[in-house]
Image (cartoon, rainbow, N blue to C red):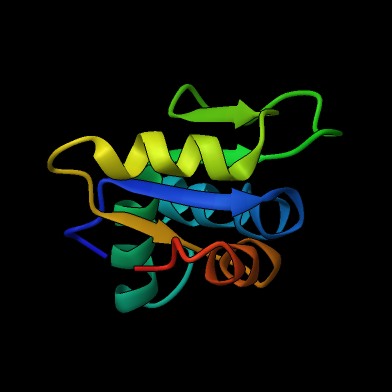
Length: 101
């Protein structure tokens, strides 16, 4: 996770992860390993693919309402970006589109 430059989520996964991990990062409210994960998670830029999410938590999160394929192609062409895609629907769709590598 420390090598990740960008986290990509759909709305549901994003809403499961945030605000939980940022809260753990702020309060150090769990185990040492989980606190370290939370700190790392909280420091990484995030993109949320959503048509219905009104706003994102934190300045490091951007909501994308455009088509997944075009945005992922743009992200993949940026040098130095280690992208972690989380959830089920988005990785599944990327596999269908041949963009999962």
